[in-house]
Image (cartoon, rainbow, N blue to C red):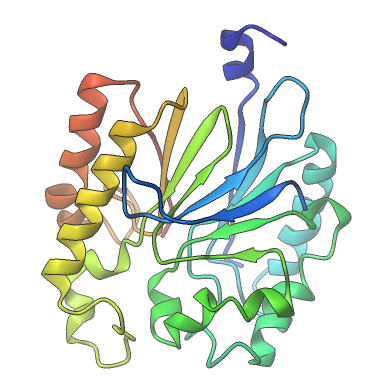
Length: 258
């Protein structure tokens, strides 16, 4: 087996921003945190990972989604990827109505058809997913439609040996969404309690993680130079948790999209 520092260098993160199975075990909650976990055992002999990250994509193939999917397939084959992470806004404009909504196949199954992309997809929800039936994307029945689609909870952890991925539900943090009646807040309200519990569980899980890399994934950026700008709620609530963990351990890598 390669030395640890060589293995770290071989962790490949390909950030694919689009407007547009390996060994997998769904494990129950562990004692050190309430966040559910997926165990994704690395298949490469040296324990390295190659992944793709994509966000803001589900558009029935329009807005260049199909073109991006084709290139993801090419790169995925070249890198022999282990899995794909989605940072949310999985289905535009308003998520899906239920697990049999044809929009799911039209925006996912029928688009990401390359052999290299027939790997697990680990997903968080974005604000556009919340304006539909937010729970439908978490329903185990969705994996009967397409077994790749893995969102076992609104926030969860993917343990993959060299790296632990902490998928965080950021939409409830954004205050102005709460005044919009289109949002599906089932399982979230009351907001303050939901966020407090999520931050506590995230802090416990990050602190307990022994992985060399800790990668936090969410939909909304903490800081951004784009038109949306910074998210003050994440600066005030989430960033301090990441900083506290960083002060005692390897700094977590953060992957957010908008």
